[in-house]
Image (cartoon, rainbow, N blue to C red; front, top):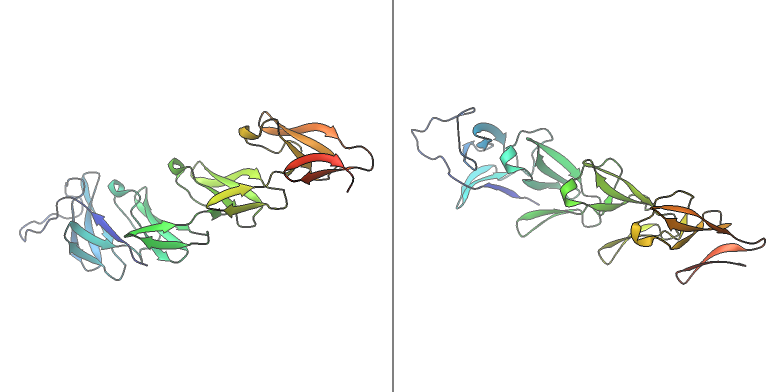
Length: 237
């Protein structure tokens, strides 16, 4: 799928205008240098940025249209246009971040698709270390389905181990982390405070307290910690 990255604002069309790289400009100014390159305003100065997609650089009713769907990691982009993006393949989004185009994997089942002229990247599945936009506060299930990940410091990192039999999964567009089994000192969400889980060895009931699972009570000899209908108890198998 292809996305056209539109730069709004003044388009320089006058034949006598000789502005080039380094010339002063206003935010949103852009013009095509040729089929595959554009001049685009970057914090008051023109830079050259490629338009490697099949539609290249062309004029559009609202400005310059630059097809970035085939742009490469590290290609320069305007910092004024942070977030301009396109799908480069069904599982990859490329977007302008900090002055250069950077790829992001779309590991979720919907992959990367164009919707209403804009790319949508399914990040509901990720691996630890995947780049992320912290301001969007994304969360994801790990690729092995055993961990809930959250964006911290610009990368996806472990938030909760999902040790229960259902692991981490996507249900009705929501992420569910099975916390019915845990290890001592595993993190737990504040909304679970006071609720129980079984220790992985099934010998002890744990309780979520102050953001971590703590010992609650050991099961008697001959009993195991059981998960039944959403309740946690000690009993015989």
